Length: 359
Ligand code: SF4
Ligand code: SF4
Ligand code: SF4
Image (cartoon, rainbow, N blue to C red; front, side):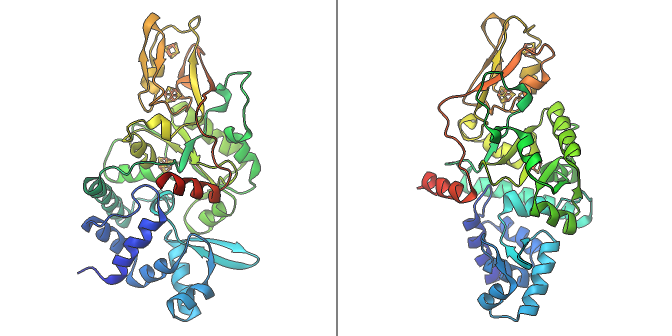
């Protein structure tokens, strides 16, 4: 029988939001019982999204500070909670499944028996989640696409937040980790279509934490740029939190296994809830109708239109720029797309927008 602490954990994970937030299915309990010991579950349930000290959490759960600190440190070393130093004090934070807890289980790219088991349990939970409640609809996007900036048409107003290099320049600490979605798929024996794995970028204090505790690797700005170039060449989508200022990670996502992209693709109009604010424009003088762009387009938003020029279906288009970077004739340029809301500035504004969207 499921222990009460795991039933309480279900409510906690529901409240933390994100894709696959929490569903009352046996597969949820199989997963969380493999991830958290009962004591860890109890401490997790006391953690908020707002960071708190071990002392504050000890008061909440009615246990000694020493005991709570030891459990929190073990959880932080296993990717079960967030941790950051503030004025010399370590503060701990509750994580949603995604982005957060799922990725942190696989950051080091190892292929242990435990990781294989967790990868299968996550997959079983996701399938049961969708079967039980239908696909969670996106009322306000928690993530957004960052366009391939070198493909943006000259003459557009380009916001700094649209430029991937903005984030690389802004942070001194940058870490790269293993892409959880593709690594988990590989552990389940699935084809990852030759897509690169070492492409998850993290910035600032979270990068330090991943390097110190979870097997992330410190990289230079130059290496980060190379990773982005390699990702663009492979046709991956740059993705981050749907804010302009509070960006501390940049994912490079595929259409087959990315948990975010595959969830978005189940929405009736994926291009309206996940986009960069840009769309492709095709130059009829240059296009030779080779259809490379159509094959590369992750959401299959392109078809061959009249006059043998690709036509874009904006209900599906992410504005990622994979069509532009793959075009052998340089016949595609990204131009600003109208009628879409600008991203919120901070995590707080994003949370408010999501709450309004869900109301
Ligand atoms: S596919 Fe995307 S969301 Fe998933 S871990 Fe990889 S880079 Fe991140
Ligand atoms: S890849 Fe370029 S040349 Fe080929 S169909 Fe697309 S736009 Fe035309
Ligand atoms: S058409 Fe496809 S590849 Fe091009 S920007 Fe839109 S989603 Fe990306």
